[in-house]
Length: 418
Ligand code: RNT
Ligand code: ZN
Image (tube, rainbow, N blue to C red; front, side, top):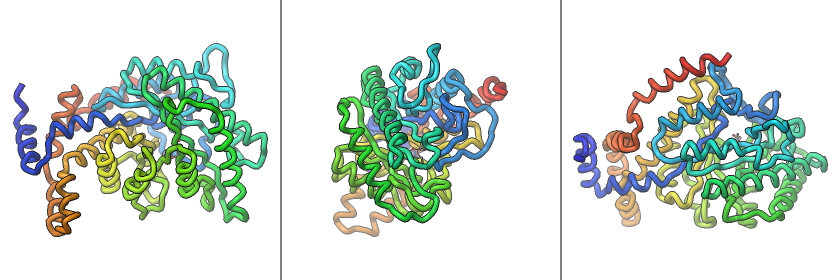
C-alpha cells in the first residue's frame, strides 16, 4: 500500500536530513513502557482503608476512581486500547487481590495473591509485569521509618515484605517470559533537622544487605532502588538519598532508578543518564513531572521530557527500564494514563527522528554555530505526521479523536461508580 501523502512527504524531509524514518519507528517499537497501575485509583490499592501516607499525596476528586480490581483492570484496558505499542504494567504490593481465603498482611504475600493480575496481563497482551514493594499506607510505616527503623520488629516486618515481593517478581517474570523490575522506594525521613543523619542510613544499608543475602534469580528480577529528595511531612531529611543509592547500587550490583520528580527543580535529570550508564548496564526511570515540588503531574511534551527522552533514545531500549509515575486525581484518570503514555512515546519518537549522529559529529568537530542552527531547525520538522502513521499502522487513533472513547467510557462506566 502506498504511504499516505503527509507521511510520504515527512519521510522525504527526514531523509534529506539523513534520518531513516522506518528505522526510527522500528526502534520505537522496542521501547516497552511500564504503565503505573496506581494512576487509576489515587494510589489506594486493595489492602487497607486508611489514608495515603509516606510523604506522597494525590490532589483532586474527579469522579470515577476505580475502587476494586475489576474496575481498575477495566480502566487499564481502556487506556491501553488508546496507546500504540506493546507495553508493561507496573504493580504495587498493595494491589494484592485477596480471594476466598482472605486478607494477609504484606509480609505474608504470595504469588497467588497476584495470579489475577497475571491472567489480566496475558489477556491484555502486555509485554511483562513490574513490581514494587509497598512501604507506605500501613500502620507499621506510621512512624515515618520502615527499613531504616530502629525498632527491630518494624524493620523485620519490612524485610520480610521485601523478600516476599522478590518471590512475586520471580513469579511474574516466569509467567510473562520477560524479566520483572522490582523497584524499592521507601518513604523514610524526618520532618525537621536531624540530629543524626548516619544511623538511619546505616540501618537501612544493613536491611538492604540482609534482603539481598536471600537468593533470588537475577536473570528474572532486576532490582532497582529509587532515591528521593524530600516528602511531604518529611521535608528535612530522606534516608534513601541519591548518593546513598548511587553508591549502594554500584557496590551491590543492583540498578539505580531516577524519578524525574525527585531532584532539585533546577537539576537536569537527563544529564545524569550518560554518567550512570558508564558505570552500570542499565538505568531505570520513573518519568514524572514535578511542578514546584515532587507533585506527580501528568507528563507534558516539555523540555524536561524531551531532554530525558533524547538521552534514553541514544542509550537504546536495552539499557533502560522505563516506567511512568504520576497520580493526578483532578482529571479523568484514564485520560491521564493515555496522555502521559502517548507523550512519553512521542518524546521518544521526536528523539529518534533527530539527526543524532550528525549532531554529535558537529559537536566533536567544534562546529557549534551549525549545531545550534540544526538543533533548533529539527524542532519544526513534521514529527506529527510520522506519529500519525505509526498510530494508523497500530490501529490506534492518531490525533485528538481518541478522546471520544474516553468521554464515552466516563459517561457509561466511570460516572456510574457512586
Ligand atoms: C514516591 C515515589 C514512588 C511512588 C510509587 C507509588 O515519591 O516516586 O515511586 O510514587 O511507588
Ligand atoms: Zn517514583
